[in-house]
Length: 181
Image 1: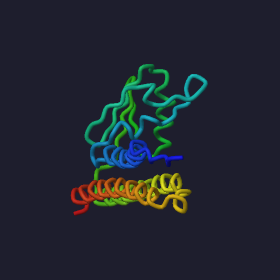
Image 2: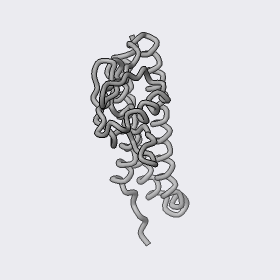
Image 3: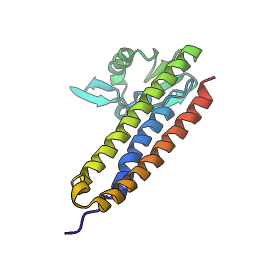
């Protein structure tokens, strides 16, 4: 019986998910330019159930604001309540839309962003370690019966882990260079 090789495509895909998670966080967290993704998944109690904000309105971003233009003006009050509950900023109402105003960018808000970014990077690192463990566990039983196979497959896994870890470090180095002054 020949041993089954590690599916490197699956390994790479699992590892890329961790990097994508970090990148999405960083893209949605630019100080002074809030991203619609920040509020798009907020659930609003409407029509006897719950719907995500992105299903109820178009969300546009501007300097320190998000404008939420509703398709149905009857949901504005319910959405306003959901937005106030997030405590992200102040909510102003205009006809069929709401404007979520974010506090101005300060050194403190940038420090908070940096802290949250590094926490997110640590979560990504934990995810990478979990993927590593998952794939090493798949070949663990070959350690005693086919040591050469185990060694060659574990080297492949480690190479992919090293590549993705380097990519994560580069992303965070660029982030720190931009925001940690």
